[in-house]
Amino acid sequence: MSSTNHSSVSVFLLLGLSRQPQQQQLLFLLFLIMYLATVLGNLLIILAISTDSRLHTPMYFFLSNLSFVDVCFSSTTVPKVLTNHILGSQEISYSGCLTQMYFLCVFADMDNVLLAVMAYDRFVAICHPLHYTKKMTHQLCALLVVESWLAVHLNALLHTLLMARLSFCGDNIIPHFFCDATPLLKLSCSDTHLNELMLNTEGAAIMVTPFVCILISYIHITSAVLRVSSPRGGWKAFSTCGSHLAVVCLFYGTIIAVYFNPSTAHSPEKDTAASVLFTVVTPMLNPFIYSLRNRDLKWSLRKLVHRSTFSFQ
Image (cartoon, rainbow, N blue to C red; front, side, top):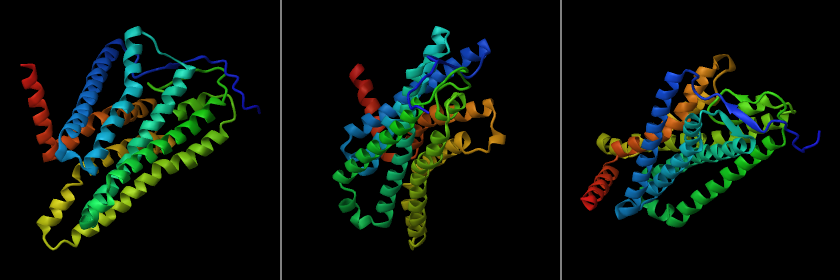
């Protein structure tokens, strides 16, 4: 078969979240509030970290990158949902759909990789505290982030190019509020064997590998904490990982609900609810989780808000 795309479909229809007018109004309001909370919360964390010299450490450097990715991740889907509701439309262009899929892949994978990098940072801080400053240099931190961006962009480009070679001949209805690889493959009238093979091998590897790294890091961290003679000292060391662990559980819990459930457990309603948690709720909750459990960040945020309030008076 020729690799040239012969799609007759120029637009896709995103069914969204509900067809009931009253529910649509409520969901529009909820999505708007959650999106504004996501942008405001994550931008405040970025500003607090960048303006407070005490927070210029590897842990907060990675956290500011995570906050930036969360804003971008949420911005890939929510503005389109809000715009379609205002315009009374369900359409997304073929090119727009592939573009959305590309950036969803980039930011979801980057979230995943950053969580693994942050787990490694905690591993070095707790298991090798005397060598922490030598190991976690500014150069290494920057290199880890740059290499992560490069890897996720190459991965997203691979899956987008593979999707672009497929033809879409008839059905153009996506039972979702965003363009994802799996529902698009179901609509294609081409042979999708290669796409599915790459999703189940390379795509799965880039999701599973960071999770394995996180698991190994926390096995070593737990072992190191248990060896501490003072229970209070061990708990204090482990408590620095509390926020990260909470975000990891939330992130991977929603990923499992969206992508790794058995096919018999899937339904449009369950899939949509899990996708909302993954793409909208998780980026919104991350700044609250980190700020509520971190004294230094809370203090910096209070100082930032106080300074902003004072400057407007």
